[in-house]
Length: 309
Length: 318
View 1 (cartoon, one colour):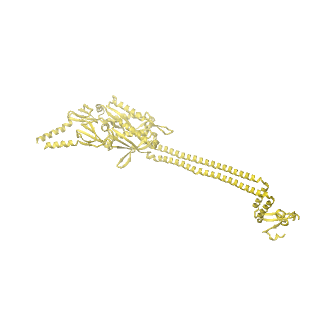
View 2 (spheres, chains in turn cyan, orange; view 1 turned 90 degrees about the horizontal axis):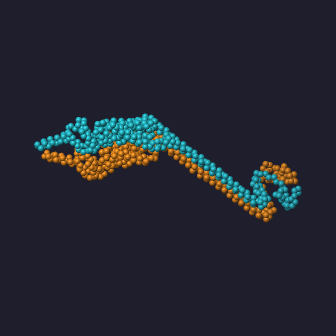
View 3 (cartoon, rainbow over the protein chains, first blue to last red; view 1 turned 45 degrees about the vertical axis):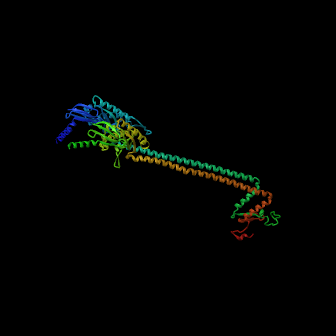
């Protein structure tokens, strides 16, 4: 029974005194030991540490890369065009003592650092125009965007200036500014509707262009087709007339060379043919009884066929 | 008895220090806050809390971060303040992207970067792969989009944008020594904002209309030109036919004439007479004939009709 009591007392004492006499410093932390507000010890390496129980207190500081998210702010550029810029900063504590003395806590640090970076950002944004901040230069004619590194350069200037500012003798926060980035650089909400209207009008312009380009090509092709068609037909017409002419000429030549053999007989024969054709049944023919045809009509002997007999 | 209880309690406490590391996982161990090493797969023991701390995480698992939308369950809903961004030619586009990554260095991942944001959003338990990665991704993507024209972004430069975003994102994360390796950056959807969607669609339709016009014109050409060529060939062929016909006819008639002429020359007078009479024979039966005798005065008023006279049959007497 006595041993149990003793053991209980020992465990109780350990439980009360242990956490007061020892503390651990994590890999992600710095530890500051203060006695009545006075810094006694700065621990920058992790591990188990001892301190005077009940008198010393420990303050932990984050040694990791910390983030300060600055509220989005609408800033004017060189040409007084506004952009809503949402940026963040990354800083790291390099001197925990200074940090503790000047800033005290992460929340306070975020506030102070945020204000310094924001004002430097505002200053730099006011020096260039918004397309350079957004990332490229637009060719008004072709709409081609030439990429620029101006945003990165601007942010690096802000970072360097912020770093100088937090390390200046006035501030001397014991931190370094590692990075400043823009998450967003957008049009302010108030002008978003105007942007949409402009985008719409640009698209309408493009659409009209495509359509009229199509009509143009169509008219070009179709009129060209009509032209070709006219040429083809005219050419064919010419060709066929030449051929017909050749045919007729050849026919005349052939006829002529045959008929020249006996023109008189041709005239005779052709006349008979012609008579057959034009003396149709409704024709009336007046004939002389003395014609060759009626030679035997009144004079069967065929003698003295002279008129007046 | 009491000692026994204490020993058992101590043993149970020590037993909680047993842990296993699966393949693909890594462990980082801390002894009173100080990193003492990391271990590979297997069954291990390390001091339990509050003396020791251990973190076991997969370093091969592909993790995913969404930008521009969130998936709750299987429903994806857009997050427009992330998705809408400005292009180099001052247009606005709506982008939804997924970043796949893994923890490449667990020590750096745990010790180097803080991450309050993602914890506040109730995701991933406040690990640095949340807000840090999100911030860097937004910064990288928006710069990449800002360096391009809206047409390039919407139409042709998706692959290049993914590559550029990935490179820039990795560069930012490396500058933080965040212990994160970006595996892929995938643009899921790149589209015009809903407010102007119809205008962009109309441009696409206009392109189609343009192609339609050109096709119509080409169809017209295909329709008209072969026809015209056919018509032309027809005209030429008809002419050729006419020529051949004319020549053949002429040759036929000429040789017929020559044949007749040959025979005619053999007995001119008789043939001539015969031809004449035959022709008359053929002609005269069909026509109304008046025979006029020169002795009777030779005047046409004194003609003698031969053959039936349809008007006055009585006048047939001489």
